[in-house]
Length: 380
Image (cartoon, rainbow, N blue to C red; front, side, top):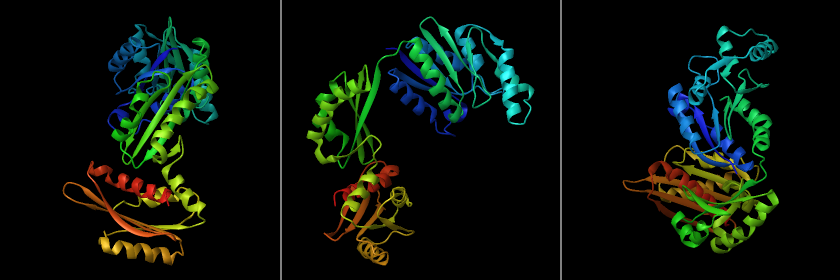
């Protein structure tokens, strides 16, 4: 099974001005194709540094995929960088220039002279037309290794990865295996506690089991390599059964299921409706719930922190005004060394109010409070 590395190119990504969504898409695409991903790297718009990153990647893997830096401007250095890494010159392809001109004509525009730069690719590379953009992509083969350069525009990159690159890699490497992941979402339990319960499974080689901690949530990932999706499922299934037996109802969902979806489904099962009053969470709890079609009748975001004794009355008053069955109130109170989260729950079955302390990083306190309150709703 071949291995791959991803190099995302762009100073705007390196400096944190934009979020790199391309690497996420590419990683999933490679995984689904059965290709091991070893590393993801981000490099600024510097041809020599990009070339060095490519050369280093080729010492570790068979496939190097770059994204970005294929535009027409001076600060689009990928063509030059790949040429430097491979020790070849760039060469002009008149047929690529014709494709670029035709693309611009369809837009009702004329290309500028700097667009001609996009018709240059490393000597010996195979050019592939970009039907959804102006920058052609190219593949440079080196015995069993390949360098594939994709545009940085997400829509173009995704289209070309799906329609050109994955079919090429499948044929070039005679890919037959798949890599499949199953993610079990947990809430209300810490990473160390989960590790204590399933640590023995984390030593397995196929399938592998790993943990990813978030604020108030932990994901358990089961990843299997097999010759088919069905065979991968057969490897995953017994491990998932063991994990479910050990973690019980700490597990709230699988794969793309969200905590807010599961929480509101608990309200719906009881044929209830719900309102939310929140303070100190910047409206994030209400926004998360509002994305789910269901029993939410409204959310009230308080601009000032209420006293803990007032939160119950505010929650109940808003619930009654909206004629809802359930009222949820959440407020986070900053302190010197921790944050206190007060939660109010009013339902046809119970009324309670309690406070929990969060001692983690302050910037994650809001997310912890939201996840903790959603966990309470899913259990009503």
